[in-house]
Image (tube, rainbow, N blue to C red):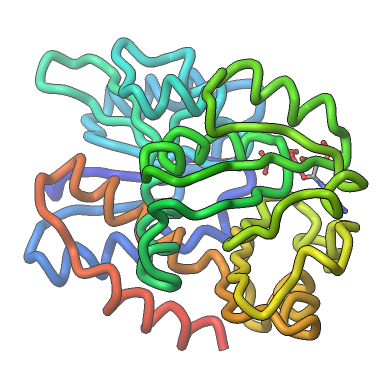
Amino acid sequence: MADRYAVIGNPVEHSQSPFIHAEFAKQTQQSLSYEKLYSPLESFKATVEQFKKEGGLGANVTVPFKEQALTLCDELSDTARAAGAVNTLSITAEDKLKGDNTDGYGLVTDLKLQFGELTNKRILILGAGGATRGCILPLLNEQIKQLVIANRTKHKAKALVEYFNHPQLSAVGFDELSQETPFDLIINATAASLTGEVPSIPVGVIHNNINCYDMVYSAKPTAFLVWAKQHKANNVADGLGMLVHQAANSFRIWLNVQPDAKAVLNKLRENLK
Ligand code: ATR
């Protein structure tokens, strides 16, 4: 029987992960199965235990279980601990559950491919939920100049800054953004794009040298990216690359083989159309 992997979520039917991992397996000639595993909200722990009992070797974890997954792990990577969330579970040879978080790696890899190195950049991240928290350490590890977290509800941004306590990290409310030194890059990590909204930040933050990234992806450019382009941002990109690169890192963690993310990204983009 092929080695068994899965993505566990609720809902999970929309997940692109089975397609991505099947493509990676083909590319690298690995024999594995990768399925969608729906878990009832109240029994995530039981779902993981059953999967482990049946010989599962690894799983991606998606909404809304990433924080809960962290509490089930016997071992955690530094990134998962900092993120407060696990998106990659591995069952070790000693039958232990190891938790990792590859979302930040996915973001940073895609940002560098899309826009170039992050060294010395002033970066603005919008939102202060789990998506932002998961990416703070990987971004700070890129020798950036400054990472400013702006959130509609400022105290949540401040709480993240207090938690990470890093000299390059600060928090503002949306209304304070006009007073900030210009940024090189804006990352939209809010949930606004899911409902076609644009976070209400001042238009003045956009200039013709700024790059804008939305963690959300869709067939058409997200509302935030359309807005940024309208106001003459330099370059924009959505989060499809982040999705594929986080998957590539999970695949490498499980199988110790680096797949070609770019080839799969091109196919996924075609499928979205
Ligand atoms: P996730 O885990 O995906 O980050 P979350 O923890 O629910 O999800 O956080 C959602 C984030 O999107 C929050 O920062 C939220 O702002 P508030 O803390 O003020 O609620 C932000 N958000 C959601 N809808 C938004 C909108 N229309 N405009 C601006 N920010 C929005």
